[in-house]
Image (cartoon, rainbow, N blue to C red):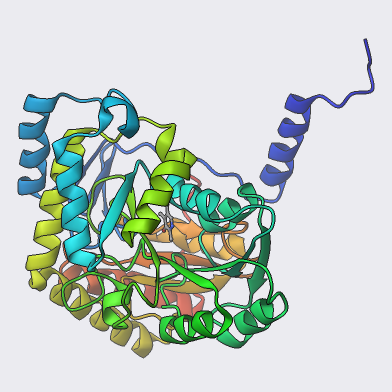
Length: 403
Ligand SMILES: *Cc1c(COP(=O)(O)O)cnc(C)c1O
């Protein structure tokens, strides 16, 4: 027996203690019920400004009925991986609907966005490859490159010249440039046309994670590539999730038939995992139909975004340069963000404070998100509650509650 080997559980407990000491401990809050943007916590009802249900489809009666009816027929579980016997007509229909919407030849479903990013990168990259990424990319993209064993090189946020330098430094190795379409914590949009041109020049492959763009951007909601009028020749690898604007769960990668054939063979997170429940695929299909056709949802959303930004501008609130439903209010230190979030909670408004390490130190914020389910009066109520931030005359902080 050796007594000098560090104990893993003790090390973990120590890291937790350090995080607690820094005031950065994370806790999931348990809500009793949700109805639209209204969340119930015990006796209290909170108006939420932090869900990713941008189009309000998570509880749409037609989507709910689709999952109910389909579950009556096909049950609950996916029962096996797609390549065993888990692939059903329902999945095939959803893949076809996603192809039609995004204008791509072929698509492959994954059980989550995390798994889609990891599977795509493991199939495309190996130790010889380089993955060039925006510094503010979603954690799943950054981690996926490292888990794929590739060399990860990051460039400053939305800096196409920085990306060019990274690619030009390694002209002779296979390279994937990956970026969020809409950045999840900042709400701004990647310079996709510039990145596409530079990938062409440098013979690199461009991958866009459009988790927050699909459903929201583009004339038909097909996302940031539709808005930037980029085709699959410009962006060969498109990934998006079904859990944000579509209100369901799961994700897909879409591109050429050859790409999807390759992922089917080599994306380990596709091969070695249970297929999404077929009933959920039916619900997602209905959500895609609604997202494509009900333009009023996007119009209302953009109207609410404009109203929030105009009101926040008048108040002098520190907003980010975003025209998407993600509207961060930048507050600096984590303590400040937490204090403001708690004050809003006291006023019946739910807006989560986003702190390091999710965002860089000193860049803590309230991540305000808007949804087509909000009304003008809801936005006005939020603005009114945020107003004291500017004057720093925050109301006396309520005692720390469950949150
Ligand atoms: C949410 C998100 C993911 C992960 O998707 P899940 O389906 O929630 O695992 C990936 N990328 C981005 C940009 C996201 O916002």
